[in-house]
Length: 260
Image 1: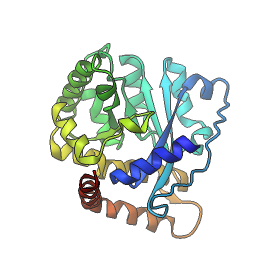
Image 2: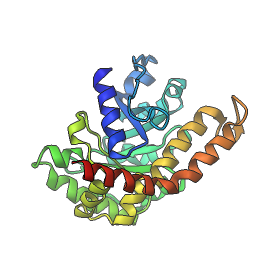
Image 3: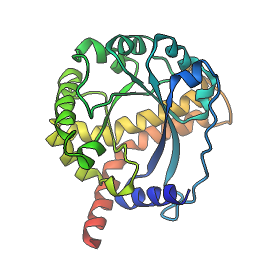
C-alpha cells in the first residue's frame, strides 16, 4: 500500500487526475473457477486527495475460446475498468465480435512481434462499440531490445485504426518509469502517432473509458440508471470536463519543469 500511495502521488505531481491500478488475471480463473479475490488496499494520497481518483482495472488474458464467456461474469463488477488481451488472431476476432458493455479496452502485447497482421476489420468493431486500443510505453523506456517491436506495432495500429480510438497508458510497475503528459505525447510521435491522437489518448479517450466503466456499474446494459440519484448527471458532467484536462496537464508540466 505504501508503494501504491507513492505511485499515485508521483502521478499527481506529473499532472494526472486519475490513476488505475491494473490486475492481470488469466480468464480461466474467472470462467472455470468462478473465483476472483483480490485484496485492493485503500490508498491515502497526500497530494490533492480531492482531485486524485484511484480506479481498479482488470486485464483478462484470453487463451481459449471458452474464456470469452467470462465477459459476462458478475465478478467483473468489482472493477472500474475491464480490459481484454487475446493471444491469437482467432481469439482477437471473437473477443471483438462479442464485445459488450463489460469491456472497455483492447490490450495487445506490443513488446513482441504480433503473431498476425492487423487489419482494419479487426479494429473497426472496436471503434463502433467504444472499445479503445491500448498503447503502453513502459517497455520502450525500460528495455531497448523491445523498443523496435513497440515502434513497429504502434505504427501498424496507428495505420489500421487511422489514429482513432487509441488509449495511451504507462503500464509501469515502478513510478520511475512514469512520464508527464507532454513527454508521453513526444514519445508517441516517435511511435508514429500524431500529437493530436496522443493527446486524445490521454484525455478524451481516457475519460470515455472511465465513463463507460462507471455506466456499467450504475446502469443496466448502459440504458437504465441504477443506484443513487443523480448518477447519470454526474457521469455526463465528468465527460464534459474532459476538455479541461489539457489545460491542467500544461499547468502541471510547467510547474514540474520550473521546480526541477
